[in-house]
Amino acid sequence: MAAATPMQSQEIRTGIMSKHSQPRLPRALVRAVAAGLAATGLALAAGPASSAGPVPAAAPQACRAGTLYLTFDTGSMSQAALIADTLRRHHIKATFFLANEPTINKDSSLDPGWAAYWKTLAADGHVFGSHTFDHVYLRGVRDGKVTMRAQFGAHAGQDVAMDQQSFCSELNRSAQALKRLSGATMSPLWRAPGGHTAPQTLQWAEQCGFKHVAWAPAGFLGDELSSERFPNKALLERALRDLRDGDIAMAHLGIWSRKDPWAPGVLEPLISGLEHKGFCFATLREHPAYRDWLRGQSATVAGQAAGSR
Image: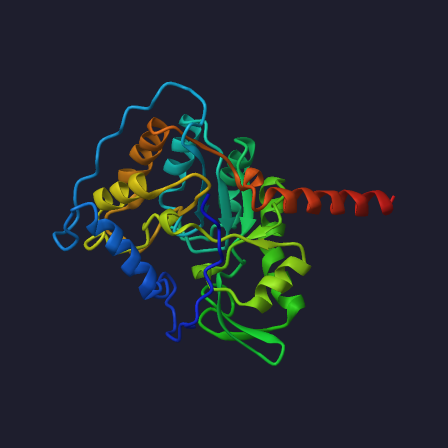
């Protein structure tokens, strides 16, 4: 089973981020994807390839190949409805990490206009975690504080020094927004934007009740990469070939910069192909690296509630 090891970057990005841009991905990660795609024999520089057709799903049976864990971060929300519909059609539960990001509707993903969407996902049985409210990126650690750069919100593009209280507040703001919009309770899980963490942020988060979730190397589904260099067909081939039992996979509910959107061309054939290979899907509540933590947190909350009566 592949371990869900946090991606701790040694390089902190220095470029100012525009409203809809993402910091450059770690070169090692992009090289790993490129190497994996090269193994499929597909050329990467030939421009976007047409999406592979759906693979017929196998008849229902035991999870002979194991269990995978689909996760989705917010983003432009351009593919949000398609992703929810596809998961519902396949009776798959996933985990969603929420930040308050600008959307194609000219609002933000945790604005009231998205309340019905989050309510529907909650009713479908999906699980939620924090992606930090303003999508803040780790820049450095010094003198007991962390420097974060907010991609969105009132301090967008600015470096902000955070102590533990303000960092935990940043995580909890997403949970509070989800509760306000949908009535759903966020699981005590978080994902750092870009996967950039430090021992300080991991420790602080756990002390205020959040455990970090990264993704498996094969689980980087590539939806934020250039579609000219990494066409959908190649990304699909790589994921179908490389995903293994226990892997956490990561994509977004929409990416501004990708010209050929990932979800319409990849998600359906990816799920069908993985089901055909004998994989099942579950939320992170069932992942062996997180289920005991989540149960312990639930017991702590229940005990605190009982003691307050």
